[in-house]
Image (tube, rainbow, N blue to C red; front, side, top):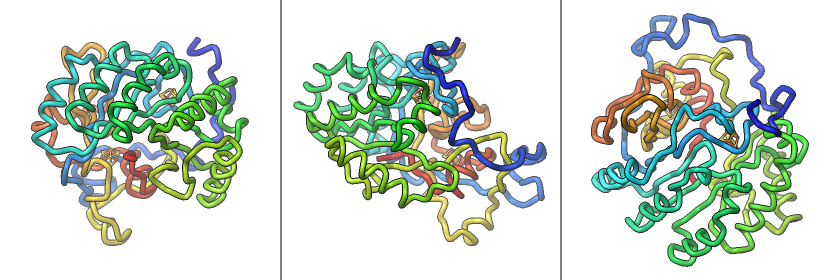
Length: 324
Ligand code: SF4
Ligand code: SF4
């Protein structure tokens, strides 16, 4: 059993598209049609993500990293693991260290790792479901807020502005604790953001209006019109068809490779069975061998071939950014 409260039905956010043809996203250099595949250089490392481990108190229907109370495919990162990357990061000048999981507050060394990043002068962004694992650390979080103010931001996942949709994705009894956690953060003056999603056929304005009403009703100090404070993510499903991204696409779409997440971020992961943490291209592809960039940030600063459906659906065509 993955979780007492794991959702039972299909995700309300399921992608509506035919299955992905097998010949797509195979060769890192060329697409199924033989066109040159797009690549993205590391323009500047603005955000270094530390994946704290995949264990989570929830088991959401479409968790992209397949987290659950039992999945430790990415093991807990330790302070000793994180320190060399924080030290090396200084040379790359990132603005921000991001912590993601799983649920970061389940990691036994999350507090010393947050402190290590904050005391080095970085801004810190923690992605959390704001439930019990976070609430256990209220006292320490208040002390950190006192010491570092708005350099510490917590971004709470609230998949939808309505309880039934949120719970269809996240499981029964997941809404009230998340709302209470978000309210606690807001009442105590933390720098906060919310990560939400759009239902198929729900337009962005409708969603922002829905969240604005929710925040007003609950007294949560977030401007739902601010895309950095209410981040709405496009959907991902590696099994559904999507166009491959060629070098021609940038001009056609009027986009630059520099706008894509992996142009300015990397993620440290410790995969179960590996002797040490490694650097992955981005937060979305922690397991794929083709997106393992090396053992250090220096090794991981090469170009990335957009050879995965997430590159197309989420990053280039969906236009998402994972940073606050
Ligand atoms: S709370 Fe986040 S990490 Fe945990 S299962 Fe849900 S989406 Fe995955
Ligand atoms: S999924 Fe997005 S961020 Fe990750 S490698 Fe592909 S384009 Fe880059």
